[in-house]
Image 1 (tube, rainbow, N blue to C red):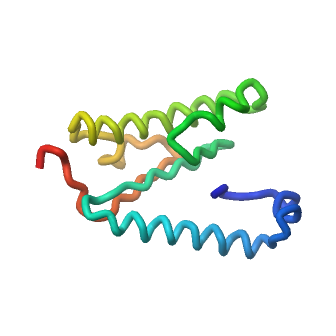
Image 2: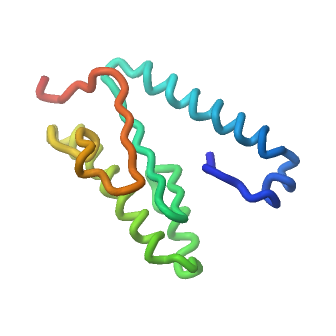
Length: 125
């Protein structure tokens, strides 16, 4: 779900800013509830980067707009940050690497937050 919509986008969707904010809060609460249910622990990496929104493990939305962005350097930086978290996740769970971006707060890029839920189990445990 997008972090924000313009007034024009909200008007065309026939919803108010308040309704959108409530829907966003409900969606975040639902995500949090699902993450808290994961018996092996879970992570929620939130990337608040200028002009960048990444909703899936694919780069297709970004690639569809390649070359049309006014702020391409920020887009590329956001894509690199998203890829680093996806890579960190897979390295942790497929290669059993204990050190990852998911486990640290000190090395996180500005605008990035990782929330941890439950006790995360490692493959070697």
